[in-house]
Image 1: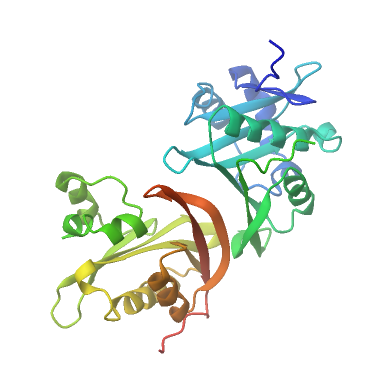
Image 2: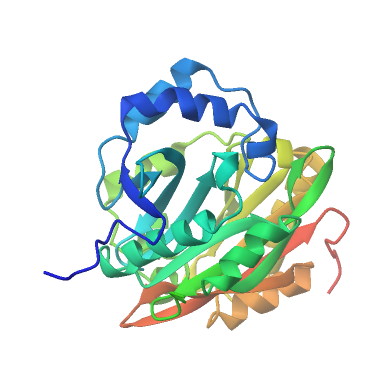
Length: 181
Length: 156
């Protein structure tokens, strides 16, 4: 064989979501330091989280929504998805969260980005992957640039959170632009 | 009428109506009541009352007071200022009646007429989504445009 697994990066692996993931997700998405740079605003109930996980546990072209686990011990550390997939345009919107704070440095985010993008291009045959990032989220923007995303625009004052309007940067990555190391 | 317009090549291209819609599928769209989420409105000539277009203002995030605009002027009514006037009217409605802070839209890069109309009304180019849209055998870019409260121009 000798083929690289399409689900695996250097540090992480993508797998389908399982009902047992719900409690950790519930903890992360009720932690303001995790959701600070996400569009989420409201406290989440266990029921909401369980409903989300059971809805997201069937994967496919229009449901490329995965749990991110460490390669060495299979520990759940985050999530990654390609949503709003358009088969005619071969485009998708990328969303990623590293919820486990112990993994915020050390390359887990970068590795997750490369793995989900490689999956999108090599397994789903996408031509373009796009994401939105709050302009103030300098760390995320650096990671996205490092893996090859280009800044394509700035939606001025597009999101209101924490008492102020924030700009949202749109970044895009076309097939062939992914930087793998 | 909306069904007839959906057969026009420029409408298909610039308004991303990829598949020919059935009359039956168009009917509920035409009958929808405008709401904060989907303010879909007919554009009619002020004097004759004739239907000349279709405009929609969608909101997804009321906390951010931001809306997204889509506009269609019927092919036989283009080039007479309806587009500019309808753009200003829907923006004014968004700011003054829905209390929005921002409206935005995407324009296919080759749609120069629309880019001109939106710029004239006060929209600013905020970016370019590359290869976002596939049509007639080729990928096209989207020009991102946005307008903040206070930037709408009523003249010219």
